[in-house]
Image (cartoon, rainbow, N blue to C red; front, side, top):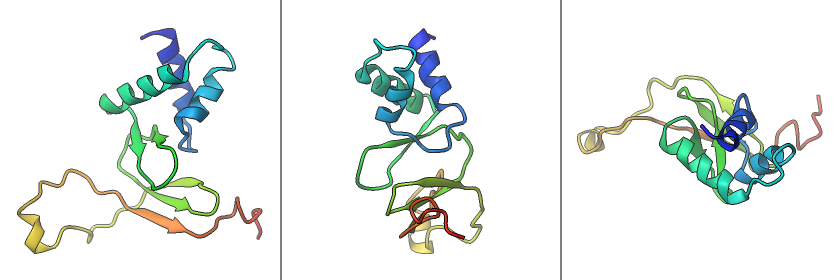
Amino acid sequence: MTAQRERIFSALHGASDHPTAEAVWSEVRTDMSSISLRTVYQTLNDLVGMGELAQLDIGPGPARFDPMNVPHHHVVCDACGRIADLTVEFPSVGLPDELAGDFDVVSTEIIFRASGCGVCRGAEG
């Protein structure tokens, strides 16, 4: 593992804010000023390919990356873009009978959408 990859991985370790590649790049550049955004993107894509990181598709905007490597869901604030992990099971969620035989489902991801959150509302109450 190269020093660059190691630093990118450490920037992601424990990151609960689901950073963009640009945010990771900005953090890594604080002590590796010569690292390129392209290197960060490539490393993130490699980590996704290895199953060490998940790339979130939450709608418009840049891709976000999630280092939490256990099954979980997300809640997204559409006002400020904040994403929070949600670890709860939904045992009754599944494919309807007419589709169940056609697909080999390996995972389920549920994304809750919010019109605001405590951060963008100024953490009121």
